[in-house]
Length: 432
Image (cartoon, rainbow, N blue to C red):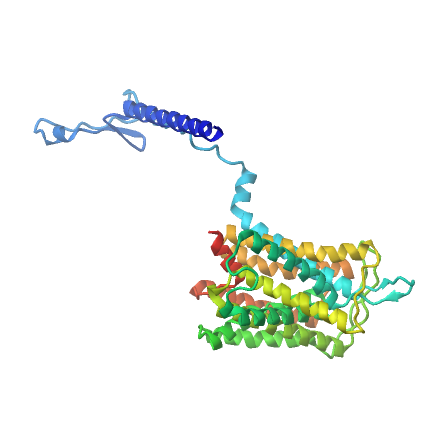
């Protein structure tokens, strides 16, 4: 009954709209019959029979300054057209995708900063003594177990074909994808123990260049010489960031964080080299993961690939926490640690959601280039929390890496080199 009433109301609305449009057309024909508007002049238009007649003579058009009455053409706005949006609404419609991607990068920087806080900030233990920060495995377990739970629930809710394990022919590749993803995320999170968030983040920008190189080897995709040169220069920038022998005295940090935390322990040159090496291992792991994703193609749903990544990371982290006595699993001691540990999962979810929504709404290079704003947020968070800026060598190396990566991105947009889709791009296509 409700459906029938709704249908009748819609039919009446459509009928009234059609009648209103017809009345406007009749009224326009009444005013503009036999006349044609040209600028500020009204030119009488003769019919085809009059133009063929030998007695027909064209008369000059009266000007606007003459006494001849002039009809002003001022078409009335249609009642069906929406009112013009206000200025703020128009700006939001124009820049919505850019703002969403920008917020996604902010939450990404917050997530990485929280991971470093949990690993470097000592906290009191149950017996009253100071203990070291949480281990990387525990942070990965807390984050990826939540991702695995929500991904599995979503796959079941959407009734995705080959639920959970994927098609039989690609399960081996999916396991390798999950393993490579674990290597990537573990290397990055562990490097945050000894590297600033901005330094570790800038190294991850090597992933697109190395992925292009790997796809050129495996999938025979184009990898121009200019991008090869940019890759070599980027690695030189990473070496500058590592600078195991520092020629400058480090700046003494000033803690201005809201919570009562101590400064991270001093980093030795060997620890800095180790962290830079693990950050590069993270880059190679992410490169391998993205290359395997391209090998899989459309044979597996992108969320199944994400679920394999979260499952493998959760299983390896849990096994390491249980089997390695020196690590062990420790519960958060106070509300601050619970808050930080929960924030990692929340920021990770908001990162994926906002990034996907932003790229879906705005597919131009404006939204894509906002990804590099993560480095700006990382610099600001390093300053706010630990009160320090990168030294001269780190700034120089980061500038070299960032310049090379931006050059490659701009060159791809200018030459329209096809980019093979990853999980997020495929998810965007499915939404269309």
